[in-house]
Length: 194
Image 1: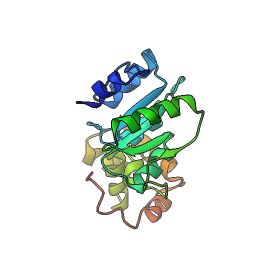
Image 2: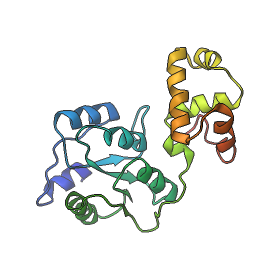
Image 3: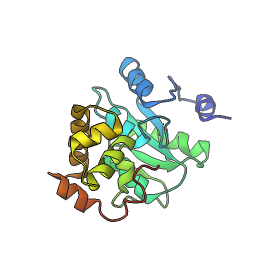
């Protein structure tokens, strides 16, 4: 039984809609807002569940978000919390536990509800950045200019500029040197891979 069906059968909950990608989820939330949204960490496409959470929390009527992950990973939990999620839980929790969490989050303003073993700690950079931002960062680390990055990724220079600005904002840095220094350890194996 799928999650949508299981939640639909739970008394007192209504599954308003289900989406297969971030763009559709944002559109649906704007058109038919929900109170609580469950988001899969590994969405298909360019945007992962952490980035979708960040975007949906900026909408005029943001829902509370529960990020579902394949594992109870503390780094993922920290990234989910930083993006504005109310909880991050592993996909293998019992449906009853998820239903209880949805009810609690819907009735409780604010707060962070972490799954056992998923206490927040400084997050792994790969969950805070989109795939394209990781590609841009990897090329920045190789000393490429924005024009060279644009040519290599086959995107416009203004688009590269937007990715670089977003990187700086997410990393809390002011320039390329700070971005490279902050991401120097543990990132090389993640550039270009997810």
